[in-house]
Image 1: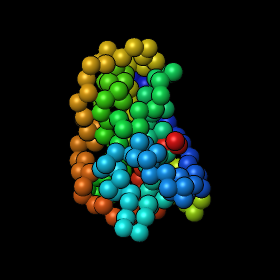
Image 2: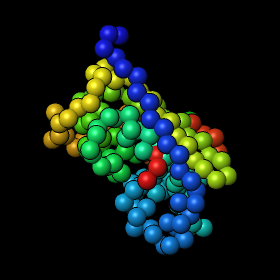
Image 3: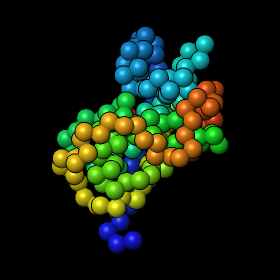
Length: 172
């Protein structure tokens, strides 16, 4: 397709960063970074799923990087990393992230997340119909939540994510 650009974002999050937030009792910070649906997937009666949280944060950052919006803060609540019925990660955009994606002609974002003992890494990829860097989104008034992955069900499987599951990772 003419004018299509491939965009990729990648990020790495050390588990020590997430561990430091949970050890400090910094639930408020995590709750600013994760949506209620993400928290339901990342929190157990015994505590936080450190690998799951690190993977989601890395995926959010990776998705943000491929949106190409210089000078904008990462809208943590506008980029959700959930689970599809097949257990792989999927992306749901809303608010500013959805507007930026629409302005770039992005219809879908794929993510892959991998966890190891000390790190979580994520890669996000998409094809954008309009290459370049939007300076002012034309859809700034839209705040509708739109699933980027058509089979998103945020409440499907609230248990711990498998190591090496497909995801995009994001760094806070």
